[in-house]
Image 1 (spheres, helix red, strand yellow):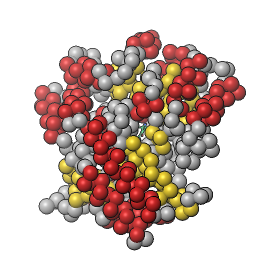
Image 2 (image 1 turned 90 degrees about the horizontal axis):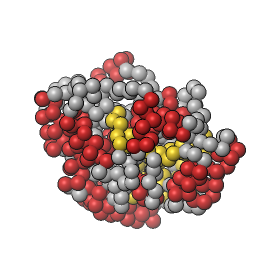
Image 3 (image 1 turned 180 degrees about the horizontal axis):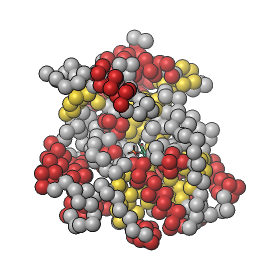
Length: 427
Ligand code: PMP
């Protein structure tokens, strides 16, 4: 039996002791005390199927034994020194990570979060090109620091501080976007921003291939190829934010950007790279990485032995357990079943995604696509009662995000869809 602090007391203390901007899911937030692969357990011992993976972070599974073991063994031997001394774990991890990258993406900077990764990537883009203007997509989430908030384009997260010479172009959203799935029109808008809003030269372009926080929006097919050409013509570099979509989650490819047939100049990653360890990385070409040698740089925890050992174990597990293929199999099944459910329930306006990176958008009216905000909240709560934890997203908060640990099975997928069916039917 669980004997530590119970939910009510934690919540009371949290409100008193922690910053008021923290938010939580569910009217009565859950006190999760244990995790095993795709399952979570609350203080009463109730088991939940986790279809959100700690916001798309637990890639291999909660407390995966191989990763726990790697972390514990390293922690017993040496936890920390920083990169002023040598250690094998950081180079082993970097070698394994770069072996997964296409093209000349062969140099790594390790950091501790997605926000930090995007900050560093932006800095590199500006230094390398000598230009200042960045282009990002509307509906993007790239982090919460002062700099990364400038890239983020959701007013729910932004503060009124200097936004740092960022142009936000229309996101090529096949469901809601003004040009539907036509990538050429969206790409032209990027050119227009460069022509009318800059000197004609830009530092770079950043995009998630699947907008995560924005509600699992897969960019219109062919978009990145067109935009990368435009941005490179204007002297800029192209950054792919793979914080959510990397490591095989999309099933068809190891990296999200590969689904668009492009090779970025800089790739940022976090979340799934560490299965829950605070870990992020920026991978780029030797030429671009070189610009950072104008000054010295130190990230105290970046690439520390414990996170590097854990990160290496993650890459090995994903390979050994063939998780990319598994995501394709289970994701295909899950999407198929959700599309069937869409036939049955008017409220499901759109089912989208790839592999285990799925969005289900709820609308009160399919023609006008009116966001079903209240219904989404209600169903979210109901699903939790039925034992399924999923994410929410989109600027209107009306998109369910299904991004479970990659060990999620077809049986788990069926359970999730059946629970959703039951919840909608009872509404
Ligand atoms: N990029 C993307 C695509 C994200 O989803 C997030 C986090 N939700 C971030 C960057 C920021 O990552 P972190 O919270 O680790 O700073």
